[in-house]
Amino acid sequence: MGSCKVGIQLYTLRDETSKDFAGALRKVAEAGFAGVEFAGYGGMEAGKLKELLDELGIVSLGSHVGIARLREALDEEIAFNKTIGSKYIVCPGLGKEYRDSEQAWKETFALLEQIGRKCGEAGLVFGYHNHSFEFQDQVDGGTAFDALFAAASADSVKVELDACWAYVAGYDPVEYLGKYSGRVPLVHFKDVRRGEDDKWLTVELGTGEVNLNAIAEAAAAAGTEWLIYEQDNTQNAPFVAMANSMKWIKENGLV
Image (tube, rainbow, N blue to C red; front, side, top):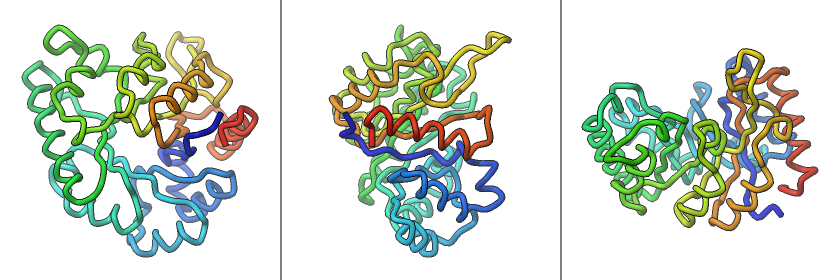
């Protein structure tokens, strides 16, 4: 099945990267992931980080960069990511001040378009990563998610679909992969189930209620380049959760 490459969002391993950033990257490579999506760079200089990635035989598929940093230091982020070999820079979400009214949302749409154009001029691809609120908030009678990608040009702002949070919001990720076919190069690939307190738990792949195989098939059909394993909170130790999820990935023919 696996026509998409498989990476990992390092936020999954934040407790481990905070202790030994390079060591965590080594374990990612040993587990069989082809690439990493950064959520911070462990204090490493860009050239040294690129050397480490090359040594380990993995790539930087891209980086999550907060909206404040995108506004204030985009040139620095572009330069860093070009040095480490990233293709993508992604906004990982929005604080409430960027989305507390329809007008705020529309101003944010314009800001994301501007950031995306600047990334494109530098040879990088810019994307936006959703949680569930983009499906819950309404703009002009539809979801903020759809309003964002209608307002922003397809060349400037790509979709990084977090399939899990679309599911949690009550939307079908497979349907959305079809809807944005050709514009969704990155998919956050995670599983979820309700806990005893009725709150959602992100869980190891194959142990929740998300139809992951259907998402993988739809992503391949939509032209997705990377399936990115992410587990916001792990029940087992992070490296154990990563290993168990990679085992599921391999058993299901995705690598």
